Image 1 (cartoon, rainbow, N blue to C red):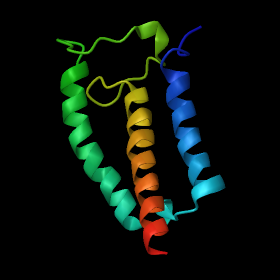
Image 2: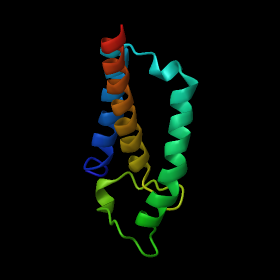
Image 3: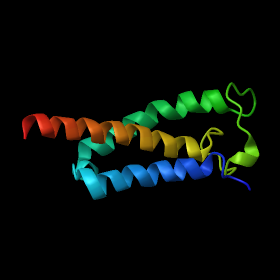
Length: 105
């Protein structure tokens, strides 16, 4: 089945991180402009680096295309990379916020 190998786990990762925030942690991270600014900064670095790594003309990282959605944007970057990146960075920030709150609150 197309997309299940990489796409499904990417979507599940995003949903799991959002569920972690909304059901358990309640840090308010998604309401903070600093969080969204940090995501813009991450994208500012992710796009050129990931684009260089995944460009179809001379890829360094090669994906098993039937295991992805096939959507690549921009610079031939599989859209799943952005989902995993969001989940990873957000999970780290959520856990950081939770630890900070438990130490100071």
